[in-house]
Amino acid sequence: MKGKFVVFEGCEGVGKSRQIKLLEEYLINNGIKYYLTREPGGTDISEQIRNIILDGKNVAMADECEALLYAAARVQLIKEELAPRLNRGELIFCDRYVDSSLAYQGKARGLGYDFVKKINSYAFENFMPDLTVFLKLSPEDAFKRKGGADGADRVELSGMEFHKKVYEGYLEIAAENPDRFAVIDASGAKEETHAKIVAALKAKGII
Ligand code: TYD
Image 1 (cartoon, rainbow, N blue to C red):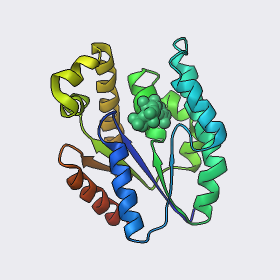
Image 2: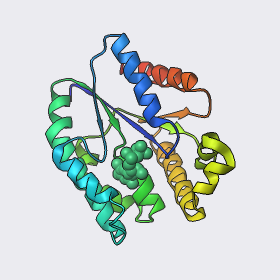
Image 3: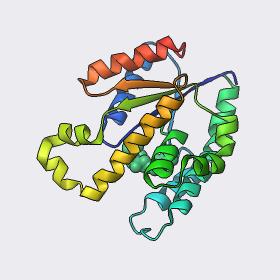
């Protein structure tokens, strides 16, 4: 593949969207062309699948069904956007990718990494990121930063337990894939985190 493929990962509330915005400003200011997309979504069909997955009405959805829908949305995004763009040599940034499925469905939902790898074999065998930028901040710290006790109150205990497992999952996956992961401490000021991300992209020869 001629292009470069970079993915952003992290738990809820770590400032991922804000960091992606800051990076976009940096890329534009430096005249670096890029394509930004997100998961689940990024194509018309994948966005329709996203609406099914994230629809609050669908409480009856089985964990396996959820995992398969993420995988289905992903294959569509790869075939419609990622593969052609990487073949043309483009620089692609994606907000979440297979590591989200490993951490959320594999670890936190308890389906296991092997199951997630199996149903995502198309992505694992053909389209892995050159770099996964993991914004490291524990869910407890993320909620504290959002507003202390108030933020913590809004999160049910079961919700917090789930997010802690997601976090543990990410740490395990990052430890198993040190070459592909840049683990960025996201506990500091947003400018500090931004500078670390830019440094990681430069170190990997992405920009
Ligand atoms: P989104 O509103 O985009 O959240 P965020 O801003 O945190 O990225 O919703 C995406 C949600 O989907 C998020 O809670 C993570 C979850 N997700 C999975 O559980 N598995 C996956 O494979 C992906 C891509 C996302």
